[in-house]
Image 1 (tube, rainbow, N blue to C red):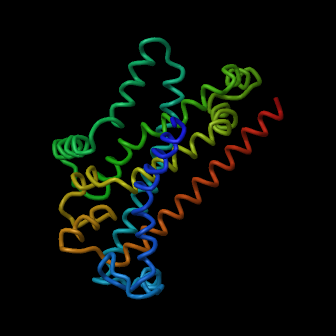
Image 2 (image 1 turned 90 degrees about the vertical axis):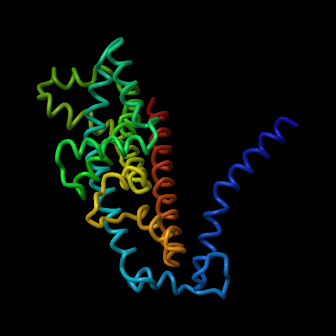
Image 3 (image 1 turned 45 degrees about the horizontal axis):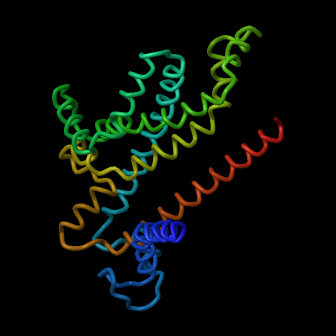
Length: 269
């Protein structure tokens, strides 16, 4: 009975999480403007999305371009800063390390609304003109801790003497970092990059408070404004389906690669 209820709970949870995505994917193959109204199988919405012939103008395409640009820049910067921070945290000892790890976890457990309002007040105090720059800085601030958490476990698996050995063999600190540590940390860095990219892609509250009044739209803010107008652009359904499939494929490839690397390391040992 315990096994039955455990499996039933798992399946119910999976159904609740993924059934809305399944419905979006199903209704992306119909031309109906109202979600839930099936008017026959059609790929017209996918064609509209790919050709830019979006219902209600090109606001969705512009929002998608802004979202991808912000997410890419934020993820790259977060990956670099997070990796450097993780190396620094790993070499701390005692209470200093615990204190820094605690501070690193705060942005992740802090509500997005508080983070967004805090950053908004900070940018106003510093006199920054709100727009692309403030949104990217805000995204870097809450994405970097996730990269740190992705890289730290990888550091714990490394031989602690490998860096010193490279220095003893004549490498400079920069060469030892780039040619010895970075290749070993690459799987954690890549996982952190994907996680940061996804978090930036998904964010609404922080973006909403830090984008200013210049009309900058991302996917999340576009969907929010679209819903307030009384409905959602039909082309959002195929767009959400494609984003979900792309992220699913990328995560599958990453997990497969990590599994192969782990198996290869086990064989070498």
